[in-house]
Length: 511
Image (cartoon, rainbow, N blue to C red; front, top):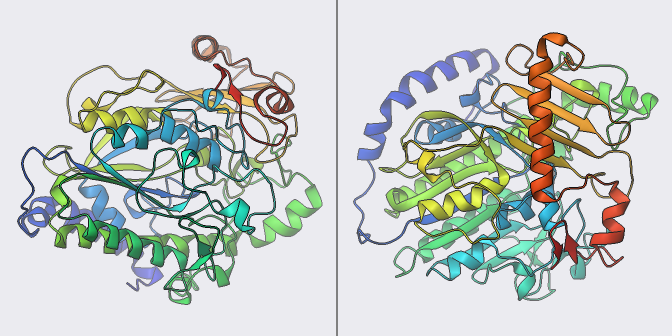
């Protein structure tokens, strides 16, 4: 879909006028289903990678070309206060599939091997009659940084390290080359995709999976983990037709840009390189990023169409979300692994026609550990006792009930290296974010309503003294419950791994 830059405002107006009031008409065009009334709902969980919450049309981004995701938002409940418990790839994924906090999974950074002696959502679903499948990026297997292309690091073998996903498996551990990439099934033989652009091929696989399980006696749960819009943001890493949508669109540095990089950032803090590499190239990177998001939207549209054509939409819980966001120069930072909104806050849309109210924007705080018990609750399955998150299925169904009054976030160190000095903890409620660094004990407090760019640290403002005290007490209480001792990064290496990046323990003891 080609939308010229000058017409983007009109495009958003059309989304609001045409799509949102048209939910009933959309539902009426779906084919009749032959699904037994008592069959549990299917689950499709789409995980994107590094997708900012504000990079979609429905979120107010007038430059975005995302009509299909905007339509999905019109049919879904939108959790506008969803956050990533640890805004980096592997820790998020470990928390997602176990319903536990990062301190309890032991997955404190990337390139660690998860301990398989944990109850996962796939294991629970298997035990309740579901067929489970996984397509795409896994990032919970390799324990050798920088050697991602070697089959022994990229291919996850059948067995316990797949954490219960014992059905269809077309995955890889980690890479972000969107062309000429490979995946693996049950051997270390790399397999080429049938299409050159990996995300398109992965959505093809998901659509084929849906068709193949349409008539099965058992419900299915498919996790589709696509690698976009993660860097590298280069023109040759996205199809040209999507790049051309934005070739004449102007992008600028963010309003909170500073020529001095944040010293608490775990990478890219050398000032000369910050100015030469990031300040100069960020506008072009943002152009590619938007192109990747547009390509993602096309493929989401194809999957939605397939669900309608197969008559499965009404009995399928569909989730669209991401593992973390991207700073893009805001607050002197790039990439992720921070409590700032652009990295920690993530989109989360959940649709189940006839059950989850459509077009509703919820302000309930949804943290990563809450996702597993919430999905199980919607499927009327009891969450295991190992789960540390909160079942918010009643919120999804539009019912009254308790909800968290804050979300607790954990920054355990560097993105992938055993380097000390980058650890933090944070709590976020519906208005404020409070964070503390381990390095020097410095603290930050932001009023996200009055200061959405988080440019003004209110920690020393006496007007906010009670807010500060309250949030600090909540942080300390949660850390005590989790046995989170807030240690330097290298401490986790020495106490929670075997020395070879295999996780053997966590804050809750040995696995």
